[in-house]
Image (cartoon, rainbow, N blue to C red; front, side):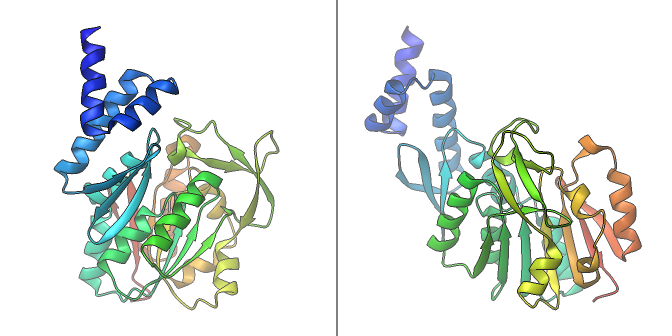
Amino acid sequence: MLSRIKIVIKSCIYLGTYNTMHYIHNGIKLHSISKEIKIYKELIKYGCNPFDIRKNSFKISINNHNILLRRFTSDYFVFKRLIIQNEYYGVIDIIKKYKVTIKTIIDAGSNIGLATIYFNNLIEGIQFICIEPNEDNFKQLEYNIKSNKIDAILYKCGLWNSSVKLYSNKNFRDRKHWSFAVSDQKNDGECIESITINDIVKNNKINSIDLLKIDIEGSEFKVLSNNLDFLKITKIIAIEIHKEFGIVNEILDLLLLYGFKLSKSGEYFVGINLLLI
């Protein structure tokens, strides 16, 4: 009982009395509240300013950007991996090493827009194209892009290799917001519009994809299975390859075939197309 009281007191101190009562009223377990307190303290330690704590979100300020992170989701862990731990350091190193001019970035699997915010903070004058199929993620993406006045075209679609009906697959990995996957196999999930990279290139009259970031929870195996004209105009690719499908080496061999020199940056394979620089 004493430990429960301590957690409630700490929650009132760090998260506010209103939030604490809201959590208890809605049956949120004390161990989940303890995790929220830890996250709040970590945000302070990392130099973030949680200047507005809402009952469902952390609204924080970092590097002159305002970011909304949903609480009790995977948002904080994406933020920590991408922004705090600087997972894209390898991409930035390649851009600097080869002096690549970056004007167009396609962010496939945008989640709530943290990769877009990261690159917007480091490189000026970029046109972003963001693709995210999940409704809840997309709403957060819209908020984060708009609140930071980022030049971005947003697609609420699943990325695929052709125009097909897609369906949500909520059973991928840990089933959290960062593990939202799509499938072309009909199921009881939400029906989602598909789009191809070639469609995006055509619709937006893109002559060069300066950076193509792909983190689409397994759909990379479909996207890279055929209709690969977009690779011919892609300077840098950063792709997370999900091992569940057993063809990691096939994708890496494909990228090598298209002229990419590969390295690793966190969970991403990063390729620079030496034929285009």
